Length: 480
Image 1 (cartoon, rainbow, N blue to C red):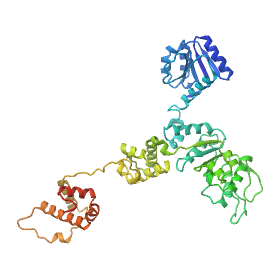
Image 2 (cartoon, one colour; image 1 turned 90 degrees about the horizontal axis):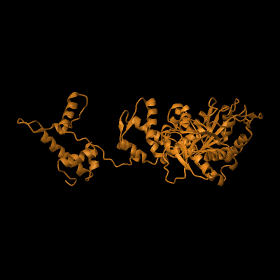
Image 3 (cartoon, rainbow, N blue to C red; image 1 turned 180 degrees about the horizontal axis):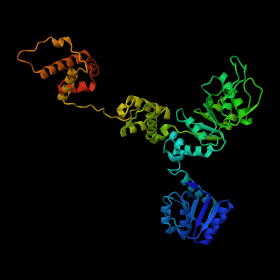
Image 4 (spheres, rainbow, N blue to C red; image 1 turned 30 degrees about the horizontal axis):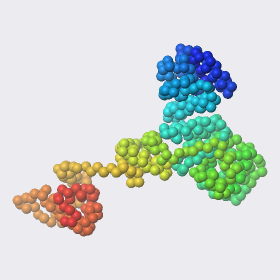
């Protein structure tokens, strides 16, 4: 839906309408007046893909306009009314009372603007913005604000400073600023200022001439030249050494540079997007970052929220991450509702990067399975959920053991001492004998491990919960 700067005013109260027209024209607004609801309805339906900045109805028509409100749910409306009991609901954003005041009119116009910009479908996950929102998934207000900021700044050449903790997706923001800019056909060149040794950073950024230093056998272009006509992403700008900060500031001011060891001045046409997880203003106070460079970079700041501040986005992020893993591993996983609830309770110190790593681990561990709370690593289990233990009938367990024994698919080692007895001619009660043997071995293990059931279970090669169940079945206690 496209936005129009025009304000529609509908009503038969010529005095009210004329007063509004006079004020709006004085402040430079575009106005179009309509006399009736019929004319307004025709005007709104003429191009359903366009919305007007606002539609103002005077008190002569506003009471009969309910059908128009309902037919145009995305269009913000204002009504002129002195009635304190008038109901503002849905797309009826506000009311204007006489005498008309500049402060009130501009505030209501701003509210209408927010009504359009903040609507749930303002930045849909898909369609023409699918690339953008594939990487910036979420419906929280904070992530929607980030998407709006990207759209607003992308098509300018303003320097952008992306702030946020490690793992929040600062490079994702930078790539999308580039993707939606007029430079999208040009290169996107990332540089991690903290990963390059200080003595090599100048050459990395500006390039060098042959023989500029030991090992410089040929001339080499730097990142600024490689990014010509595109975007240069300076990640972790807070780690840039101060001597390099001075040289970067000069490039930003003059849009020219020289290669290391060279004298030729090279002009550059590059958009700068910088990012850091550090508090640059504190670094300025500590004398570790140049204030003048900070203000050059901080033309348009974008704050990436921490994942713990938008936990309701976790299910959507999981869906997106699992979808990516399907392509990489040719397998998938799903999550139970209580598993999702547990993950939403986590603090996510590593943010989206930590979540991505967890999903990859789970895909490897539980391919094509349903993941529950107790399948998660312990640090992610924030719900106390008892682990399910199947209670198989004894007959079924015996059948499984004998099936494995005689099928040859599984070798079962029988201790020599178990074969020392000969089968009496009159026969034996095998089930009773096995129970007595099991009781005796359990008692020995408990005594040997000083009554510690978990260690006794390890000695017997079974789970602790299985041993506890057998002890309950035989009426045994740890003491005897």
